[in-house]
Image 1 (cartoon, rainbow, N blue to C red):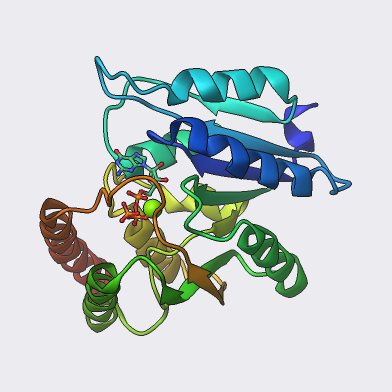
Image 2 (image 1 turned 180 degrees about the vertical axis):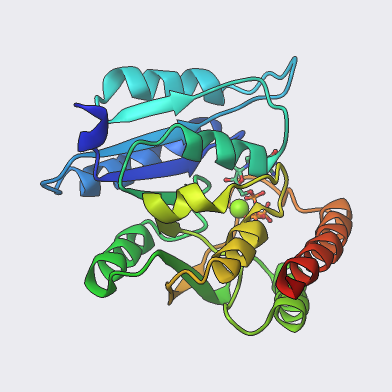
Length: 241
Ligand SMILES: Nc1nc2c(ncn2[C@@H]2O[C@H](COP(=O)(O)OP(=O)(O)OP(=O)(O)O)[C@@H](O)[C@H]2O)c(=O)[nH]1
Ligand SMILES: [Mg+2]
């Protein structure tokens, strides 16, 4: 497969997913196999130093087994944002999709987003969660976060952190993403607004986290608040020019 032949790339974040990544990737792969254009899946399994995480070896095996699957597996120098940037950077497709590999987002939403992208010729398609099955606590935090985001940056988008997101390569190259943490989704949407990208949003359900407790702690909320504050200051300065 020549590099410029890839039409659609999908980045799957696999951090600490271990064996649970297998059914998810296999489901995506079986649907993608129906497509008659070239596509690739990039599995991101970066790991912490001295970790016993089995995910890197599991995704390596998948990439050896399936020609359309590649993996990125390096020692972590950041959190989710760093992983996502590493994955996006290694894609080759004209359209680039991103999703968590923990099964909370419905697999079929990737294909619904892509259909919308091609039908309406937009620069970015994302989902918004009409209902979250991951509990009251996460629902309230998410609602509060989105409310603050909309007050600071305007009512352009619903549910900034929702995935999948799919973006055209030409638009992705203009984003120039910098975040290494949870703020990367917000950074994508703030940049989309600044660049006046054409965005479409589609509704989905969000499933409960199975098999592990939430990674989101109070420290993540403080980090979001700090990031929102700095991003808003920067955004205001940029809009003054
Ligand atoms: N928590 C965490 N996730 C990471 C990191 N790097 C990449 N990820 C990926 O980010 C995705 C989203 O993280 P989650 O912790 O599931 O975020 P969430 O779904 O909003 O929250 P919870 O399900 O409540 O933990 C996961 O699929 C991970 O693969 C990291 O350093 N920490
Ligand atoms: Mg999750």
